[in-house]
Structures are given as C-alpha cells and as structure tokens.
Amino acid sequence: MELIIVKEFVVAAILGFIIGLQRELSFFHNDKPIYMGARTLAIISLIGYLSTKLYKDYPLILTLSFLLVGLFLLAFYIINAYNDKLERGNTTEFSALIAFIMGVLVYDYLEFAIFATIILIAILEIKPKLISLKKEIKEKDSRATILFLLMTFVVLPILPNHTIDPYDLFNPRQIWLMVILISGLSFIGYIVTRFFSASKGLLVMGFFGGLASSTAVTLTLSKKASSNNETNTALVVAIAIASSTMFLRIILWTFILDRELFEALLLPYLLATVVGYTFIYAIYIQTKQKEISQEVAFHNPLEFHTALKMGILFGVIFSVLSLVDTYMGSLGVYLVSFLSGLSDVDAIVLSLGELFNEAKLSKEAVLYAIILATVANTLTKIVISFIVGNRFIALKLFTIFSLSLVVLVTSFYFLEIM
Image 1 (cartoon, rainbow, N blue to C red):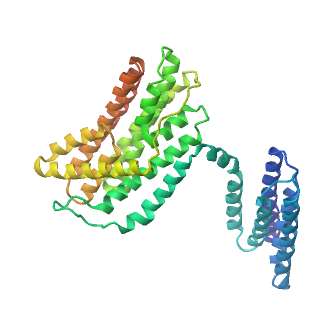
Image 2 (cartoon, rainbow, N blue to C red):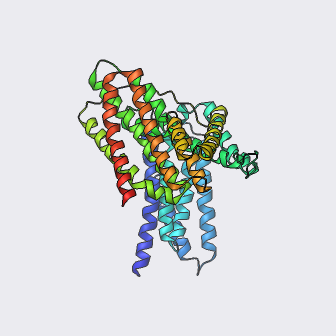
Image 3 (cartoon, one colour):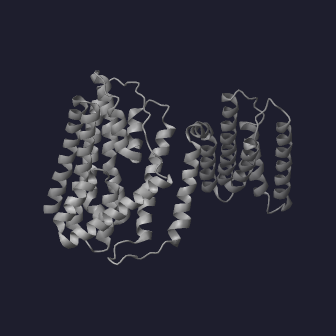
C-alpha cells in the first residue's frame, strides 16, 4: 500500500474524530446525552474518503454514500426533535455532514480540508461566548450596527466625491469615510469591553477601552479613586493602558492614510508604546490585583447622533486647518492641532493626513502637528485624573506619560536629523 494512501486515510479519520470530539465535549459540559460523537464522525469522514477513492472504478458510490449519510443524519434529526433529553438544534447533524465532506476533500485537497476543519472547530467553540455576548448587547446596539452598515454600503457610495462649498473645503464622501473609520475602530473596542465586562481583568479592559474611548476610561476610573493606594495603582494601570493605546491608534490611522507619514511616525510611536507598556507592566506585577468595577460609561459610536457629531467635528477641524494654513501658516496649524487634541486626537490626525494627501500641508507640518495633538490629549488625561481622581493617580500617570512622550519626541527628533 502506498504511503500517501495511508496518510490520507489517517488524516480523514483524525479530522472526523476531532469534529466528533468537540461535539462530545459540548454534550458533556451541557449535561446532555451523547448520541453522535468522535467515533461516529470519524467513520463518516472515512466513508467520504473511501467513496472518493473508489469513485473512478465505481462512479455511483460517492452519490450513494452521500445519500446514505444524509438519510442517517435525517433520522437522527427526527429523533432529536421528539426527544427532550437530547440536544435541541441541528448543529451536530451539520457537523457530521461536514465531516463527510472533509473526508471527500482529503483525497485531492488535504491541506484545505485541515484548514476547513480548524475553522469549523473555532465556529463550534464560540457558542458559549456568543450566549454571553447576547446578554451584553442591547437592542440599541443592534440598531446601531445596522446603521453602520447603512452608513458604509448605502450612504457612502451616493455622497458626492467632490467639494460642495465655495471655499473648496467640504467633500461629503471624504468626511463620511473618516467618520466610518473612526466609528468602526471605536465600535470594536466598545463591543469587546461589553464582552469582558463581567471579568476583572483591568489590563484587557484598559486596552480595548482605549480603542473605544480612552477619555471615557480615564474619567470613569478616576471617579473610583480612594484612600487605598493599592486600589489607586490598579486604576492607574487601566487608565495608562487605555491612554497608551492612543499611540497604536495613531499608527493605524497613518498606515491607512499615507505610507510616508506611517514610515516617519512608526518607530517613534512604537517605541513610546513599548516603553509605556513596559513601565505599566512593572507597576502591575508589583500591585495586588483589585476587584474594581469596570462599568465604563461608553457611548455606542455607531449611534446616529454620535456619528453625526463626529462628522461635524471632522468637517470643522478639516476646514479650520485649511483656513489657518492659508492665513496663518504652520503656526496656525500647530495651534489648531494642539487645541483639537485636547478633546479628540482621531479627528485631527485624520484631518491632517487628508490635507497632506491633497498637498495642502507639508510633511513636516503634519508630523509636528500630530505630535502636538498627542501631547495635548495626554495632558487632558492627566488633568482629568487630578480633578476627578486624586493627586496620587495624577502623579503616577504624569510619570508614565512623561516617559512615553520623552521617548516619542526624542526618537522622532533623532530620526528627523539623521
């Protein structure tokens, strides 16, 4: 017997066995009787492989095998429907059918069959997570998601892709595209924080909270400040991670907007992020983890009024930058960038990137303006932590952020003069 046949035979059996094992474990953990498991699905997969192997000599065997397996699964589905002790649904039957198809694929597409099985197992394993997620997602979140799809695939294509004002400033499609980019990334962070809201991992909440809104994380957690320095240090860790995630957001925006800006800012911002995370982790491992409520007051970024306000903000910042560059030069751009950065860094970075793409701002002016906006936004977090929280949290954050900003500015300076 050829070695390749042995290999395919074994792989077909293993793929079916793995799929069946996942179903068995699912039954076991849900206290359900096991009626179709690892051995059954391994056999079904082997039937698929053997039928394909014999297809050239017996053309009808593959069709007959498929029909027999189909009838077998249909019988189990009917039994399942009338037996309250068995699992409701048809996931296992479909998994068995896919096991048969995996056996068929092994004959000519072995690597694809392995890949497809891995994807199937991943899909089967996310069921408990989906149940938890459904409990966290509200009806308004579902409506907001539908709105986002409309914003992206219906509204965006019909918006004019040219300026519509006498001053050649407002491009509706350009502005709306920026809104979609910011809303999409923020929504990912928003959903993930809802998903992990029941856990007590400040590191996870801080990182993904930073994708949604680092300002919201800073404001909410600063309110939880107490006289206990261990508790306050845990809060500092979460706030610092959320705020440091802003550096990664800027790297992402420059990557999307322009390769030249991305290459100029990648190393400085990456170094600042690594240094910041390292310092935060050093604090984290020296502090006892505290059970701190993580309910952060996020607004769904896909709600219509939130998206509309973001679009207006982006349009205003974009227009103001264009005007001040015309009448005040780079100094005006730096001033607007700093002031805008105090409240939001995403809108100013995207506005600067678009102006650079349109050759309305020089590369040097854009890079300096982005760094100024970063510094301004970081200062905002420190001020919030001092006013809403206490001096201990503010001083800790000041130390962490100062170190990151020094690394950012220093590395950027040396790269510029080289």
